[in-house]
Length: 287
Image (cartoon, rainbow, N blue to C red):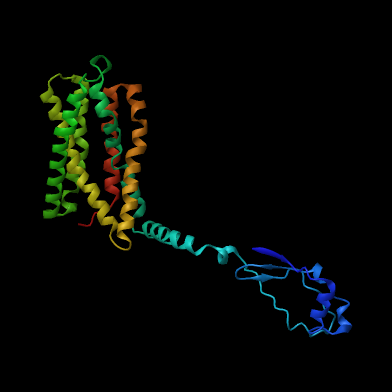
């Protein structure tokens, strides 16, 4: 906004006003040095207008435009174009039917798994005297990077195939059990501390297979929940909640493992599986 001052002399001002204001009334007017006006792209404001004598009707040449009553008219249109789709997507997401149970499901379904995933490899790397398994980095890489990945893919593929045949509702609770119960293998590993790589690799494969199989239910629920208006954007919000649900519980996993020891910590993880069961019962699966 540019503040402009009329710098004409009093003599020039009088000459200009002679055309619209009678001479008899000009004495009561302020000089042009006393008046100012404000220019904006859309509005012109004259905050202090001269007081014309009573009965004067010669101000036809003066135009006054009112200022906007609020700041909405002054918003940058480019900013509105950027924010509007984002706000609309949030509105669509939070207006979905059953959004509160769905949010709890997204955040807490993997509450036990988020803690287990953070401490499984440190547990294997720690020495036997510290309650771990005392494995080398190469052995842990083989167990998780090869055997575990193969089992995870196999569980996910099997879960997807079964859901395509019978529907998610049919396999909902078997998948919930599959992602929860295999966590118990870590209780055995922490208490027995086996040295056989076959036993350790088998336990890792069982847990990862169950996780891949059960995680199918979680992802398909997000897909079904996102259907409708702005489905792609809604699904992106769901995946963000999924990441948040893994990050927050994992932040306390290391502290709890050091405080309680690995065996007690894995018992705690199994107890947390009840959270998975509760939030799974809260949501409605239609097919």
